[in-house]
Length: 265
Image (cartoon, rainbow, N blue to C red; front, side):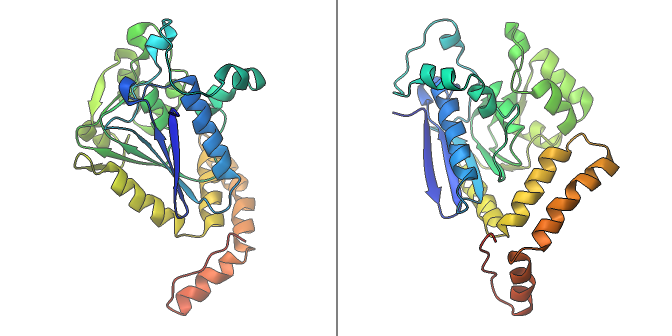
């Protein structure tokens, strides 16, 4: 059974981390399959949004520490060694260290989203969690380093002192606490995260795909830039959207009181 499952629902791709026996701990095969899915979505104009979730009531419990300790049994038939030999950076691309797909990602979190689970979450634009979900970046507890970028990303996304406490103590947060500090955007009854995430994803996918892709690129590329530099950087993206056929279709549909028919051109 693959460590990550890929499905389509209209213009939305759904990626399910699929190692429930290990609370969906990250394996090499899982990360490679996820990266392949991001690339597939980025190269398919019919995909306009991605949802990432986990199988059987958990999002992701981080890197598989058992595998790191030598207990590496796994049923996924993917030849991870060959793929990593071809691209030694592929795992870190899947962790979004220096790679992003071209459309927004919605996280649907149930259960644990610890260590690498919270690291993945930080690279996703919209975030929904069941009320019993737990979050944290626990690497320091085991004398490890959060290589998914949390030491950089987290203090840019939530207040510095909260980020520092999470990173340095390894503390875990409830869904309510994560919502309160802005790490996630929605808390829903347990079992409802995927449904709400799909509603958000379809709302994104119903919008102009060129506009949402350009806004997503701006969010990624302008993060950390000085304001004037960021405003100059985004200008060309905005101009390209306004020059598109979809930018004519949107106002026309509004005037005619109908649903727009966007083509991504």
